[in-house]
Length: 397
Ligand code: FAD
Ligand code: SF4
Image (cartoon, rainbow, N blue to C red):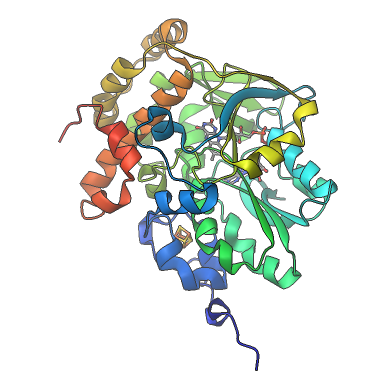
């Protein structure tokens, strides 16, 4: 008699019903599959276990004597990079989509988990298990909304695939790493992006309507290293809004509770991370965490320009000042916000120091959020590296 894997006896949760992590659920997709069997151990919001999973994925966890490890996680190398020929319509220059296409066409993997949008709505996520480069390219550009990427996990076992690439953000990847051994794969590759301040589809609408002059024509947006949000519109025009002019009083509740309590901005468990915030304006930022990540990056070396990472300025004062401002929901008048944006851009943190600025601002905010809303979770949910980062600042009660 053949034995059935325990998870196959479990049943996915019905769409729309309350998830085990309740309001902290980031809709990562695990509970849409029979892998819900492992949710208590696997869910990033029920069982924070970054250090243990780092050791499993990279052979070691963060070295807490090294500040770079607190901030950027386990890594062999970091660099700035951009594609010599960018992919039109990608979020940045399309390094993520290019690596995924190369891995598939060279036969390193049989499928790629990524997320397209629904035909009706450019920002509504539709996760897929891609088996052609066309399907991967159709998943380019951020869906800036919570996305159930792991909802396609059952298809992997059913398809009999043994070699797989998963593209995803931190909370998805933590749950994935926790069930990795149950997937029956010979090799799993993980290509991550940083992620912060994500929203539900309704939350996104509120953000766009409160912040942009033409919310319905936006095709793409990003919080850039020049301290402005850049909205790209259908006609190709770019609208910029300074961070300090965001209507924080109206936007306070817009971010998902999961993202307000997340301390894995840098996707600690991916093999290779592709973002932008540690790189100069216009460049992407790459973090190679282990040999698998290096193997993935090597596939596209001839298609990218690279340069070393740099760091300048001092973020600490700006972070300290932003803590009470955010806490009280202060919004600056637009002229002051623009002025502050210009000054900060000239003298403010750049390169890795900009990334530290963003990490510090979000972790201090999130620490206060968890402390106030889930005090019983604070100790176990906040990883040691994040406690050290937050410990550098004076926080209100
Ligand atoms: P592309 O080639 O355009 O490919 C994008 C890939 O992202 C696609 O494969 C798609 O499957 C995947 N994807 C899209 N939306 C989602 C989603 N919601 N969940 C999971 N996967 C998704 N980088 C930073 O440095 N700092 C940040 O603060 C930051 N915030 C981000 C917030 C979100 C919600 C997301 C999705 C990404 C964020 N990034 C951030 C990463 C950055 O915006 C780019 O995605 C990254 O640099 C890759 O660009 P690219 O041109 O190579 O990607
Ligand atoms: Fe399930 Fe993922 Fe939500 Fe946790 S975050 S409850 S694993 S769907």
